[in-house]
View: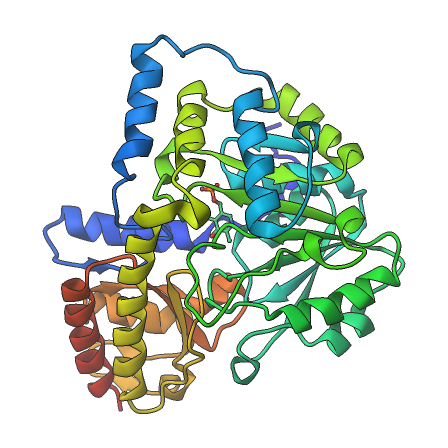
Length: 402
Ligand code: PLP
């Protein structure tokens, strides 16, 4: 028979992919859609990094690398984690993968038994609950609110921990909200984690460098007592505009990291040799990515400021000013229940996104994809000029709803 495994049947397809595909189809059909749905910097990979990749090819550095990544790169990662994050790892406590996504998926597979609970604060990055399901674990979603800047309430966390709780996934700065966890809040969470010896924290720090002062990044593993209990994930896609190079990594206690490496050895083996050379160059750019990253972060900050100011002027839109990443997660629920001529009623984040795409020709992602139907995610990895045009289109479209 042609049936599929129950594992894959339990997994939802990505809504972000669905809306991006629709937007792309519209653009191909000649409709001038502004696409603000992707989670990808609009910048090119900084030249010194790209050149290191080109040199790797020229020099014939094009063969298999060790499963866990080259020693050169893992040593550079250990230096980075020590200097920038205050966490000490040795190269055998690091596994380099084809993107942070693979690092996260392998970690979930390595630690979860069937029926284990994976605690995920919402709004969450779309893949976390599905990774839990792929590991036959159960996602336990903990809501947060826009008035708390989408930060997890430690009391709620404490009340939801059970015998089966195995993993808590934290993402700071966050996709989709841009929230940054302050150190004091992480310390409170750490005190709760410490009381539950089976519970590990999977800390997704991929947006670490895209952060707006005075906000600062704290690595969960650097908190007292948390080194043993944390798996730290980071990567090159976002900060270094290297999405297509596919490179991320995980660091943590050897017992868990070796297990992640074992899974990888049977799935994909070592990541691209070329990308790893480029990554060494990225880590060589200086503290927090040096000048090239600072330039991109400055541009992201200007765009954030422009969008926050613009949306504050629109009736009914609620905002939590993002402190990092390149997303705004705006509450548009004020407009639910309204209708436009020729379109019908806006029921939820999905129909509002469809309306803004059809009528406003702006592609955004419905909050339902991230576990919060009151909101919509806007990615500001686009030029200020494009963002200005997008705001005008959104404003006009919303004004037509009554
Ligand atoms: N984690 C978060 C929160 C993300 O937004 C992304 C990318 O969208 C990833 C992980 C995966 O990044 P990559 O696999 O490109 O390293």
